[in-house]
Image 1 (cartoon, rainbow over the protein chains, first blue to last red):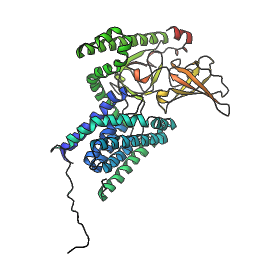
Image 2 (image 1 turned 45 degrees about the vertical axis):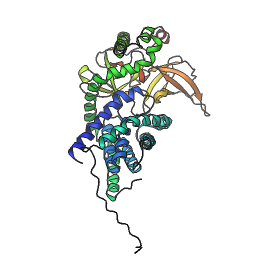
Image 3 (image 1 turned 120 degrees about the horizontal axis):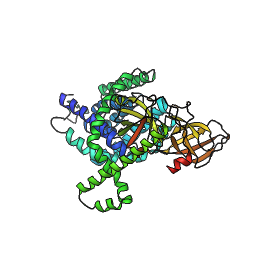
Image 4 (image 1 turned 60 degrees about the horizontal axis):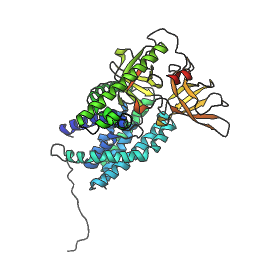
Length: 177
Length: 287
């Protein structure tokens, strides 16, 4: 990762967490919408699983450390989110990517809720995560409608574009002469 | 569908192991306490700055649903230009803050506690699982961990972490939180467990207690709860009796987290005064 991408990633992480806490969460308190999760999904969909996993793990860890629950819950959930979206994102349309984002974020939210229920907060957290799953998915899709085009535009600029690995494909088969 | 390379698989396993390691470390005895404290302090300062910029916009959006229904003057002005609408919303926010301040002052006077008013600057952070608020007052204002937070009449939560200029409050409605409470009609004591936006589940210590819909529930008894006694927790909205005869009740919260803006932190230890007496339901109704 070059220095510009690192600084940009850090800036996006902090901005995402600040917007989540000061705008998204207060305006949608009944539904567990997550702007940081949508950001992780967007980065993974555009840049692939490596960037998605690194971004998801780092952002999750910062969110964990800034929270009252044990560190590692969101790091693990958003690591999985980055992996899932990174794998699913190849050559999809914007609409397809929004659907993938909504489904993956809902899954990650359920996973985090269950994990939190096991390690920290009892069954009520899992029930809240399950009950809020569908509205959160719809809300995340709406967030993705704004975030994904921005992420696609930004991550495809020459400065922020990821270096693509050189792939040599050898096709082995019977020669037709 | 992309495929993982061997290197990516190894990276995924390493990161997952790291996350589980952090989880174990944090659960095992607070090994990451100072890291939590540092990040919370840094984020708290950033929330203050961000709230100063985005707060007016948020208040404007939050005020939109009531602006058209409760104030015909504002409804008329809504059709005017955007600048004028912003000014009306700002004035409305000031009036609400003034009313809240007056209520906090009343609570401080009647309860003989020192209360530090503070504004909510952030919720969370996290994926919606943390029922926490960040307030714009901290240890420099006398706030300490475990102090009770109120909106003037009802229980909001308790201080979880405080740094010089901000503090994090765990809402009483947090799904992992329990509050020692008393049914003010019958005097039955028990535990109210948070259920997020659904309020609380109240389980009286006496399994044969008779609870009724409409019973007011408040923190208490004094000395047996980590919260200041006598603060309204909510009202019983439904009562269930299980097959084994155990009674439990759903309590509608007295404080709606989504409407919180200005709250008060009760400075226990700031004055050596007797604990606040339990609220009288009729007096509360009159208020």
